[in-house]
Length: 164
Image (cartoon, rainbow, N blue to C red; front, side):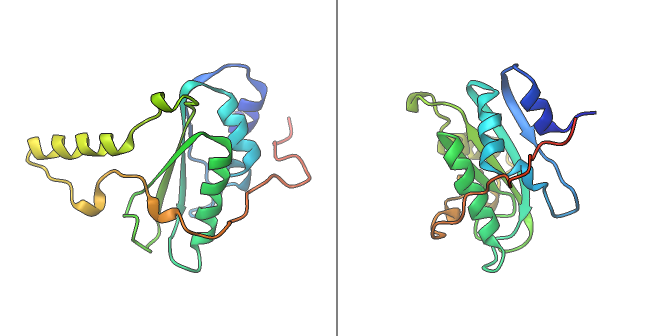
């Protein structure tokens, strides 16, 4: 069994999708999966138009949201387009999953249109007579904009890769 970051480091393969859902405890992701170096590595292993989906657990409460802002800023430094979906809602301060989506489309015309996807999701739910509550609909979590210059998350001096 190989650590996911080590695997990406050692392979020359390119993928349509990379999914990161690593935890070292109930609420803590290993820090080496939220750094600029990791996001750049993942981006380099994606095909044109590929997607990195990373799941993080946290809260938008004032005393804890800085970590999520920092992950967002860091991911935006590696990917041309980033979306965040707050599973309990973008205005909720409860603990929830945040799905970060980094889209590797450098051509703006090929970038994902999450607003269009949300409209299709809403129309499909209405057609099935299963309306999605407004606070649960898919949309970019613009609420994560506004934190003043959160730090980029970087690897420490030591290698973030697990030993071979």
